[in-house]
Image (cartoon, rainbow, N blue to C red; front, side):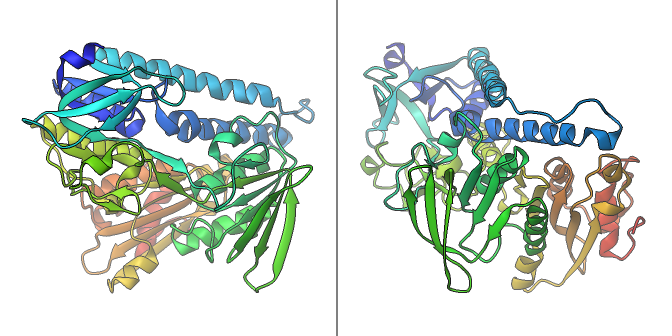
Length: 479
């Protein structure tokens, strides 16, 4: 193949958000780039099985609920809506196809050579040149060959974890199988209440399914501020979602009509429940097996994740790791993408700065939405920080009233002495958009005083941010 005769400045293994973003920025910076992808389409889990299709479905679910309640908005004569699941899948697939074509265009635009096939590292660089073997992938994509590059960026992503002894299939699902179900199930048990679990629970509850969520830890969305978890659980129960926390799953079994889950509840009682489908959403495992890491003994692994420094460099010169495979970073597409930008900029000798863990926004696209950044109240107190906290409810925001979305609040955690914002936690309408303001403010080290005198347009949901900042000093206007 043509790639055998070329020495690239950088070869990137994996064409998901981390890998393709790194490739685009490296190309923009004038580097000669090869992007190695084992699938026949770019985009990775995020585009094909994660972020994009799930959020497309969430939008469908939002529209469906609005139409169901059309009379409340003075829109009559519609009758009871019916869901065309085939159209939902068709729309989801169309969005994926559009963005796959967009990525192909961006590769051409930025002169990135895309090499199809299974990539495998072959050992340390020789005379400053790394060699990556290319073979046909298990899905038949690719052909034998090799790619040579001065630098290698590993961006192989992650796979859904399964409970021991369980294989996914028609009734026991991961995020992959659930996106291609032929019909909406009447009932579903979801094991795990991280973003994947609660998002799918929210989607299929909107479509009328009976949803049960089983979580091992004491609260759902356990990575969030405790008050956010409490509010989401309250609204889920209000929506008819059956939530069990502090529950230890003992077994998952197939039945004639679906699957059965047995767990021990928080009181030590055994609970058995059946449903048409069971979704296992207990996290994601790094995809670091079978890519030749054993040929590079300087790379250190932590439970399968690759250890890097702040510039995403591994223990091997010229080898970097980005995205879901990096130890200590949250498995989020936007984190992987920014890590890719950092590496591509650094390799080209351009300005770059490391990703700061405390400035990474987390977004959960449930109803209501969750957006958060920085320290939770409990984390700040555990660190012994002297803090002040403010909280403003969306029920007191005029735009929330207009769009009939009153659940949730904005919560702001600040340093008591200097007024620096160290955490913002939002649950409510458009929380995943509103959190961007907090990320910018914290990145620029804005103080509470500065933010309290920043004009926010009226009427907007963003005004809730202004009132949230004011609430820290007991000076929220609208409550």
